[in-house]
Length: 468
Image (tube, rainbow, N blue to C red):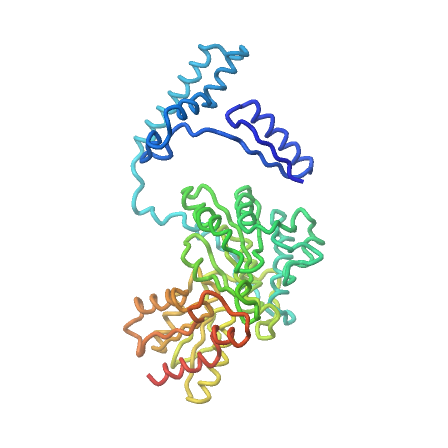
């Protein structure tokens, strides 16, 4: 189904005719076309490169004779389309246009240093939605269904929203059924399967977003996101900033993550630590159905790109069930939730670790008669520093719990913030419980349990904290 052409890319007529044929083929629904255009490199790669050191004079002369501009000029003269004087006039006009652009640029002052942080994200005014206008009060719902309902509601609201990814279309509706029913309800033009190509999924989403669409794409597992890293790091995260606010690409990337499902090396990764290092992208990591729905609906409406992380083990977990919010329920990014109030120590956590932390707290409180506060940060970026710092200032002891590896995990950043901004309030060292520093999650259940944080690990860390 792939048509392939190899052409002389320095020949305008041949290039035009071939591309025209490929476009007509695509628009007729006949499939893709690959064009291999052979071209020349007329000048060195960069100002620090002198290609005369590694290219022969004969090679350079041969390539100069294939200069597409000179070849086009010869064609126009030969066919009598333009005269020598008319071509020289075009060159003169272009020279004048370039000189004028240089003059304008040279007269402009250098950018002021106080603008260096502008346009990392959309202006806050564009994110002023009516948050938490209602209270979740519907029937209890599992998290994956809450995500599915959020997608249905937002696609109904926004005709420019499209959803795609690997196996997301009906009748499958995604490997976890998060997108079930979207193709049936909204059609194949708005909810469709993509090739197994993560870079293509994200790259096309950026293009759609630039053109005014709201793409919500799925990377089937967090472990598969790495082929898309160039698109995310170099394009998506930087688009608004490097265009000085002229362009934006508010893509939503949904990604199932996490272990505890015996998924082994390629279906268990936690990725928030990597992406927290990329300014320009918001990151959500909900722990329950209501938060997942409220945050996803917000992600579908704001003008910033969002990485939306969904823990696979919570999709149908009774622990993560909650009353379903209505269609008007939106949660703001950067607002943590205090899951349990306490005065003797603070746990800062997110995702599945919220529930393991609450289990550990129950054990420790019964044994020691203490009261421990548990904070679910809900979003990695922006991070609700205020809630964390206020709690630490109250309790003077803090434990950070996350599933990702300990070294350079996001808990290290939270620890640094607390050390810098609340050090004088601490009565003990900051403690962390996290996954082991190993390159992948083992498949064997015994080894997976040994690699990932368990309730007993948190109990032990809390006991050390309380006794300090």
